Image (cartoon, rainbow, N blue to C red):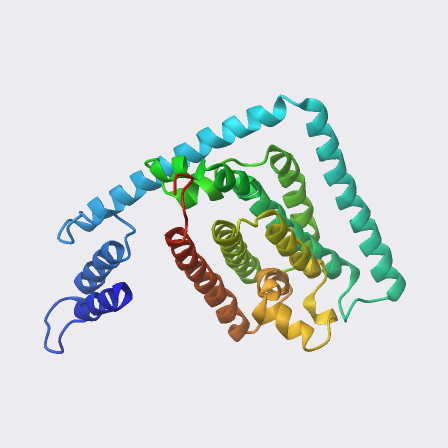
Length: 320
C-alpha cells in the first residue's frame, strides 16, 4: 500500500498538457517531492520549502551520520591498536596472502600463455579489482561480523532505541583498522596495473562508476546477511558463504562454463559486481552491460533494504 501511495504521488507530479510552467520549475518541484516521498528527508518537511533548504537539511543529516561513523570507527581503532601483537599477526597474514596469490596468478597466466584470452596484466587487474571491492566493503562493514552476539544477547534492543538508524549502526558501526592500513598500497597497485592497460579518460571514469555500482551490490549482500541474522540467528556462516562465493571472481567469470557463468553473472551477480568493472577499463563492456551493472546495483540495494525492514518486523526482543 505504501508503494501504491508513493506511485500515486509521483503520478501527480506530472504536469497537465496545457501547463505553462517552465521546465526548470517542473524539475525542481519534482525533485523536492521525490526527496520527501521516499523519506530522504524528514516527513514533516513541507514540499513547498525552497529547494536550497531541502538540500541543506540533507547535507546536515549526512554530516550527522558521518560524525557518528567517525566516532564509532575511532573507538574501534583504539580497541584494535591496544592489542599490537594481534594486529601485527593479522596484518602480516593479510599481506602474505595477497603477495602469494599475486605470485601464483602471475606464474599461472605466464605458464599458460593466456587466461581465457586475457593477458597477464589483465588477469592481475581482475584480481586487483576483486581486492578493491572486497577490502573496501570489509573496511566499512566489519561490524556485520559482530552482529550475531547483539541479537543473541538482546543488546540489539538497545540499538533500536538509539536516535540513529539501526541499519546504519549494525552495518557501519566501526571500520577495520587493518584494512585501513592495506587500502592505500592496494589502491596504488591497482592504479599502476590499470595504467599498463592504457585506458582512455572515458574508460577510467566508466571503471570508477561501475566500481561504485559493484560496491552497492556488496552493500546489498551485507544487508541481506544482517537480515538473515535477525530471522535465523545465523550470521557467521552466511557471511563466510558470501566470502567464498565472491572469491570465485578473483578470476574473470569468463573462465567458467555455462550454466555456472550465467549463475555467477545474474543470479549471484558477482560477475556484474567485479568482472564488469574490470572489463570497463579494458574497453570490453557494451552499453547494455553498463546499463545492467548500474541497474543491478540500485535494484539489489533497494531489495536488500526492503528485506531488512521485513526482518525487523519478525524480530523478537530479549524481553519477548
